[in-house]
Amino acid sequence: MTKKLMSLRAEGAAISPLCTLAPMQWDCFVVSLLAMTPQKKQDSCVYFPRKSYKETAPHIIKEIKMLHRKPRGIQKRKTFKEVAEILNEKGFTTSSDKPFTAMNVHKIIKRQG
Image 1 (tube, rainbow, N blue to C red):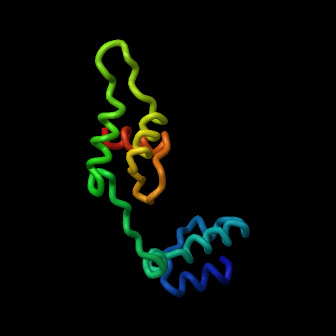
Image 2: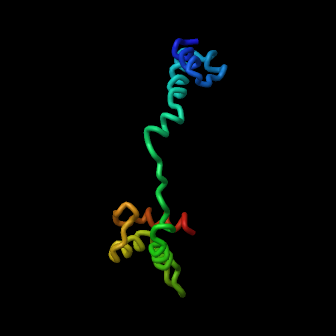
Image 3: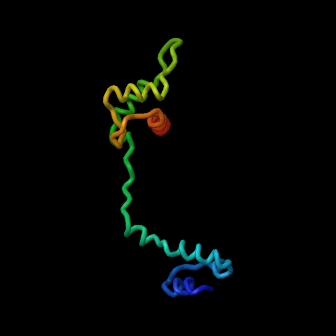
């Protein structure tokens, strides 16, 4: 066992028996994984999940669904690109204050049903 693994074991890190049998190149990999403890991760950054359009702007979802809806008769429904262009003309923006793209519209429809 390498000195790094022994020092980590002395600090109380959980080391699997496979680590001691691993070749030298794997020892460094395992040591780097063990060094990234959850406590260090929590101390360094705070994670706040982004809210959905359902919570922040339900009126945008309603507008997208209305625009993408298939009209009666032979007419075809609007494409995601056409819906994005109409939303941009009306002054709507994404949650990051950027203009809508076809991919934004597609993901909203896919996630919000």
